[in-house]
Image (cartoon, rainbow, N blue to C red; front, side):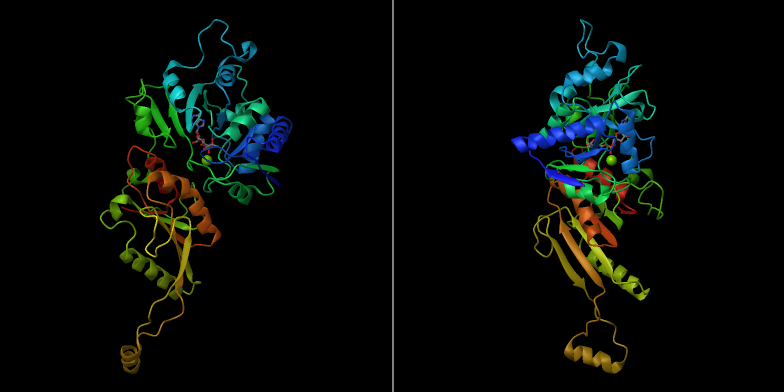
Length: 413
Ligand code: TXA
Ligand code: MG
């Protein structure tokens, strides 16, 4: 498995990109590549065998359609034109790109926005891309590396996020390696992704237009475009489905999930307490105590904070504090109680380990750090992860909270 570090500019990188493009044209195993949102697992969207390779590598159910990545609008026009007459030009006919999308395209492309388009009869796209739907999702990524790769491959790239199915998305090349080792041959390393959550998916073919998945472009930004002022939300988050119902373990729709159990504190819960408080940490400690009494190994507890660059212990973002959770045992006898009064409490064995991580102070930094924080705590074998939610308004916070609600097995509101 090769990881090649590339920055789209220098000549050796161009050579690497050419080799990757050649690989995409000829092989049926997908290639990991960076975009500004998350890493993708790309394949030539016009070749069935190559697209099937994506589903195999990801372990993804084949009824979930893929996003098609283009490097320019002419590449998109070819996909919108029936196969037998496709030549990418308009032949004096009207532009095949639906008018409703023009304001979005000029404002957000290249960038983290996916639009749904009608898939023509005799489509150039492999049928596996659309999973049998009449539409396909398309976006033009802003990562120069992604754009260069698509251009050199000379074909649109179908690409889902480069994580194993159900896992948190990958935002670094090593995240991709972690999930895809033995399943793919090649990952292009372009450093950590700038946005950190996936693209916003919109459908402008229905009326009113809808947002199918919140992402890197906010609802407010979309609403401000001509023709999009009535845009509606067509996704539902867990908290709106059934208020604060602790979800049964192993409930089937797992998504974005680390191995650890995730407990999400909605921003409303933490309001006025500035996030996870010392009381909450007490509760967490008790959970650990119970685990120990039940005879299981000491618990490793992760906390992801989103309210301050500094955690309670004065840490900077991205750094992980690890402190042992210890608690004084109840004195058993009168003598022990007197001793404890004189000498202070006798500390027990460590109950567990607390891994305390901060991913920043605003929605953008939370988006950027979210998936890598979940993965880091997994690597450190956290059994449970407590996450501070952020106020879910019209900005990228909606994407952050949407992913967290899906990852959570328990929501406290
Ligand atoms: O930022 C992103 O969008 C990343 C990067 C790699 O570009 N890709 C990504 O792909 O997140 P994936 O496969 O993990 O998510 C694609 C989403 C899914 O929710 C899928 O159901 C939806 O887009 N989708 C794709 N085509 C669709 C269609 N024709 N109709 C409805 N939903 C569609
Ligand atoms: Mg995904």
